[in-house]
Amino acid sequence: MSKPEENTEKKESAQILNKKLKDVEISIPIVYGNIAFWLGKKSNEYQSHKWTIYVRGATNEDLGVVIKRAVFQLHSSFNNPTRVIEAPPFELSEAGWGEFEIAITLYFHSDVCDKPLNLYHHLKLYPEDEPGPVSIKKPVVVESYDEIVFPEPSEGFLARVQSHPAVNLPRLPAGFTLPPPMPVEDTSKRKRGDTKDNPLAQWFMKFSEADKLLQLAAARQQVQAHIAKLRRQISLINGQDQRLKSPSNQ
Image (cartoon, rainbow, N blue to C red; front, side):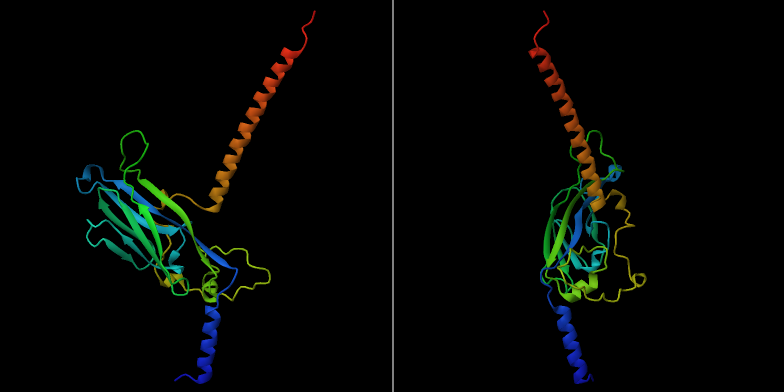
């Protein structure tokens, strides 16, 4: 049996870990969507495509540090339309012919949040605005980027995830000291939950900050080039006006 002093220490430790941190937010960038392959000659009136619906880290990191399980609600025509994924990667594959809305419910670990998060994704099988025949090699990819924000996290949650690559920690308030990190689980002893080696990863869209910066830089160059072009045109117009206004030589 535990001694009273030990029980008191455990209670105090639990109170510290459950303490809410004001003016602090933790955000988890996620991507959810689907990839669909046309089956070509293997297709029939009931199964024209093979598709996968998923929730992944924006940079393919393991979301299992925050998400406990994901529930995908498929169309009622599927056998067992409520699919529960208890461990990462949070994805499921099926085959069918129709497009429909899929409700995704994310449940979090007890120290993260006690309320589930509901997402909605319209399953897309057929390409839009693409000329030419449909290819069995090039899939239809539809993804959405979002960030799950946890305001006032507990000290235990922050200590557990502060070094995890899937988690974004904002600038902390002045004078705030991070709690000591908890021991990291040996990932070699459990199944990998990231999607970096996923067979579909080559088709994933990129949502990293580096990619965003590159896109912004490219857009800035286009704007600067357009401004330079407009300035040249204005300069030419001003030059023509000056020549028209100048008195003619007698």
